[in-house]
Image 1 (cartoon, one colour):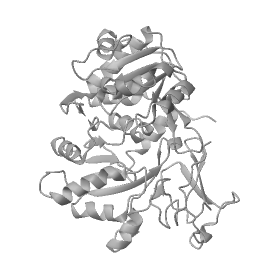
Image 2 (image 1 turned 90 degrees about the vertical axis):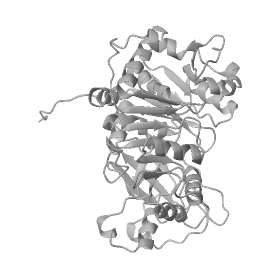
Image 3 (image 1 turned 60 degrees about the vertical axis):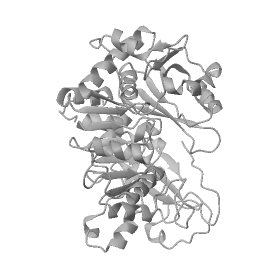
Image 4 (image 1 turned 30 degrees about the vertical axis):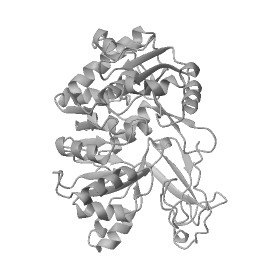
Amino acid sequence: MRGTMMEGPLLVPALLDRAARYFPDVEVVSRQPDKSVHRTNWGEVHRRSRALAESLSRLGMRKGDRVATLMWNHARHLETYFAVPLLGGITHTLNLRLHPDDLASIATHAGDRFLVVDDVLWPLFDKFRSRSPFERVIVVRHGATELPVGSLDYEQLVASGNPSFTPPQLDETDACGLCYTSGTTGKNKGVVYTHRSTVLHTLMIPYADGIALRSSDSLLPVVPMFHVNAWGLPFAAPMVGAKLVFPGPHLDAQSLLQLMESEKVTIGAGVPTIWMGILDALDKEPKRYKLQKDIRMVVGGSAAPEALIRGFDRHGLHLLHAWGMTEMSPIGSCAQLKPKMQDWDYDAKIAVRAKQGLPAPLVDVRAMDETGRAVPRSRRRTRTWKGRPIGGRATAGSRPATWSPSTPRGICRSPTAPRTSSSRAANGSAPWRWRTS
């Protein structure tokens, strides 16, 4: 017997449609390269992304085409995030921190037809332009810069596009995103996301025992949009109607703290080095910045030391440890305390918060030994660490199954975690490499 519930595909454009319908006036704020602040809202982002999509279709973009981006975090990058999947295309975020040779190789391997690039990053693009596969290059100009010869102006495409056009019909299993991960052996490897996998991942971000993003939040993703789609946050913010604040290229502690103060940021996301710089600035001038109370700061990419968690606690700010990987879109777990832990002493709570926490819903986790066999839970706390890879972690659920290394105790750590006995590498051994499927 089949159920009687309505069926509908899980599609990325629906996330932005919801923001335009119910939260059109909620702001999307971007710090520009010249440090000025640009303001728009979800209604405008929705209209402009559709206009961009229509212009791209007139340029010859078709379903399945890859559109690369080489941009910092800002509203026009966000518009591209939604415009490309609306046409059935695949947004391919290029990591601007990679060597030009790697960027040329990745773009060629992906078969990218289009590139959307910041004018301030044109010098980087120029280093591999002759080896790139792009048929059309679209430039986002942040000031009165001259348009490079042979390129197209982003704003002109938006202005000439028709946001009321009828996009092609999509299937939830269609690809919509592409990221290349360097956390592998050999060359960078591509991970392709579907509409379905992206929407399912997005639904986990407001999960109360996870990041718990909600419409009352002001969200600052310091994590780059070229790093696993900024951990999926640019998709979650419109879904819940949260204010979205982009730092642009200004990632120093003072710039970030000023933005957190002026935009009343309640939740941020970044790697430990970002938060270390902010903690140092707060320790030096604890009364300078008027921040919101109980800001949640999601940390991932590598293991955060306990001292960092304790340091932010002193300032009334909460560091939330998360773990994931490119193949998982990326969130796999968050370190929220269980109810029974609330009465534990402070040091015991810190020990739990310094780990990567419980797997997200629909994610299965198992520890494996060096032969590939599952390790019984009763054995995971008794195995000894000898400074070499002896464990494994398998993940499966709403996203494709994959394999990655873990510690012998089954505790999630990232491949760039500090070299301690509880990290991926110990006693000076090399960091573990990831194996992707």
